[in-house]
Image 1 (cartoon, rainbow, N blue to C red):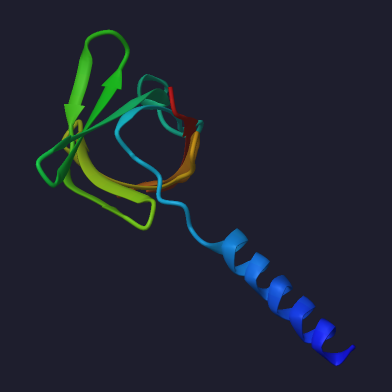
Image 2 (cartoon, rainbow, N blue to C red; image 1 turned 180 degrees about the vertical axis):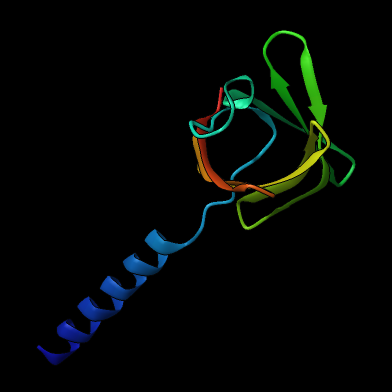
Length: 120
């Protein structure tokens, strides 16, 4: 009986370990974003992530024609971070990717805004 209890505990522990294991998300592709507190013209758009060699590249698309290339792009542990310059202002974006959505922040001199969106 004691062996069965120990076996059940081991199986339970193993199941929690596999559930909590982080699944690596491929960041490449187009992710919509919404930042409700941002000025209207920057409150929604797309984050386009591509990979050249071992480095990720990010470009923000706002509307049909306006694009902003990001710099300082990093992707580690499902967290995508980058910087963009908007009207001369540096904006640092950090967002956690899930299989089909993301959630994070955009920080600039006036404060920090929440951003979120989905993979297209």
